[in-house]
Length: 181
Ligand SMILES: NC(=O)c1ccc[n+]([C@@H]2O[C@H](COP(=O)([O-])OP(=O)(O)OC[C@H]3O[C@@H](n4cnc5c(N)ncnc54)[C@H](OP(=O)(O)O)[C@@H]3O)[C@@H](O)[C@H]2O)c1
Image 1 (cartoon, rainbow, N blue to C red):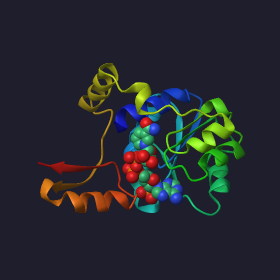
Image 2 (cartoon, rainbow, N blue to C red):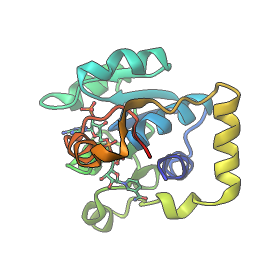
Image 3 (tube, rainbow, N blue to C red):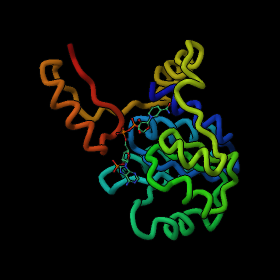
Image 4 (cartoon, rainbow, N blue to C red):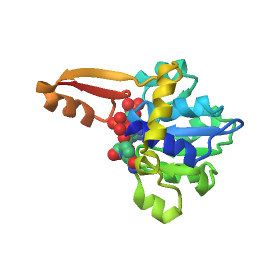
């Protein structure tokens, strides 16, 4: 699901060569795949993430930027003042931030803030727009060729499913948590 969602979001904002794309939630389940797809497509990618995820992003060709107070200025500094596209996987004011940075509504995609999307006319393409066998085969081929990594934050036995969900609910998982039956 996160693969198809990331695929749909990157396609929705048409990230490609010459573009600077900002991804909010850049090291999360959806974001960690979206940033890699956008880098592979030739875009310059700025990833918003907390400090423990900065090295992983840098290792994958992404410029890491911390979120929180002053984030708009840090993005302007990292992008030389020009952002073409924005993917929001978090949903707490990032659509407004993208507009404030001068991104056109048709190059903003949110998978988490449907109220802002309705208000500002930005895109909401997510899982439903790309969940098909062709896209999954494309993503699997990228993984097979070493062009796409799905980070595994932790592996839990199925008997510890509650702990796995409590971990996920903290909202700071890098990539995915695996449950092993
Ligand atoms: N519409 C769809 O089709 C669709 C599909 C899949 C998911 N979703 C939704 O998309 C959202 C993300 O899903 P996910 O699986 O990627 O979640 P996740 O793996 O839990 O990732 C959450 C991310 O949010 C970041 N984060 C937490 N607080 C933040 C803040 N204040 N500012 C910026 N970033 C912050 C975390 O970054 P750090 O760890 O670096 O702090 C983390 O990377 C969820 O709301 C989910 O329901 C929608």
